[in-house]
Image 1: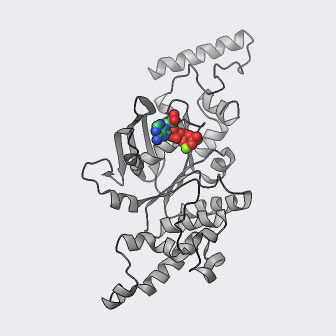
Image 2: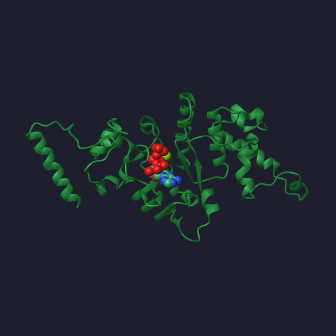
Image 3: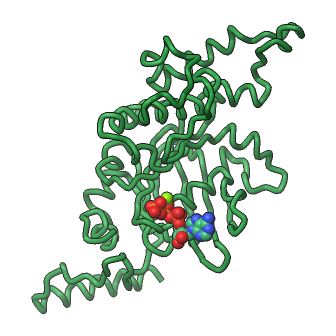
Length: 312
Ligand SMILES: Nc1ncnc2c1ncn2[C@@H]1O[C@H](COP(=O)(O)OP(=O)(O)OP(=O)(O)O)[C@@H](O)[C@H]1O
Ligand SMILES: [Mg+2]
């Protein structure tokens, strides 16, 4: 099928040229709907190294609304993968599939396969607590708990029973206070926040600025030692300076973690990601490739129209 699409596209473009019609006359509408067929080759991204996540034939419905359509995608480890596309195209839906957060949405039905390092996360026996330890998530609005900075960072390891502190722990001879202090410092350093908060670790986290709160949420996510970090527009509520700190941090984290980031900001995707997946209206993955290729020479006319700002 893809071959015949290819031929007809070439034929059309030849016709357009011979008739003197500018290539600007694309059939894309203001919302990105068009006659263009998606070709498998456009999403079949090849890369060196291992895939951390392998997504196959993923579909999501909210009731009768088919929000994500047959998405297959391999996500390379220790790199930044950006997900871009117009509002409502399914980016958040897709991201939530990667750690089964859609399980929490009653109306959502997910079909397909997602493997994390070879383990099927949609297996009926999959351990969701373990899964969310391996795949952390950072949301658009910073959401620290109304607790101290220290407690925010050590929350996950305490919950998982990896750290015990307090009176009972002391009475039982399991006082991990020093271990907790190390972990808190290490996680805050990794999130590029330690220097700013080291003298007020017991202050309420809600007293931090928005950008600091977001880095705290990243530190909280790092404290459980995940393999993958999912970020849904983590900087969109922040000012340019706080945004650039988050961007630097994302790049730094990708040396050790697999980062998948949704962003509305095209320049941000171009700056920080290694590969970019473009979703368009209707929940389709249209093109997925090296970020340079997507921004400089995309295959899809609709992707080109989208990244050059013709719609979305
Ligand atoms: N909890 C939900 N219940 C019902 N429909 C939903 C739900 N969440 C998303 N949808 C629908 O699924 C489609 C995809 O939404 P999604 O939030 O994934 O898009 P998005 O690309 O993240 O958009 P944005 O850029 O605005 O955040 C939309 O049509 C949306 O209305
Ligand atoms: Mg979204």
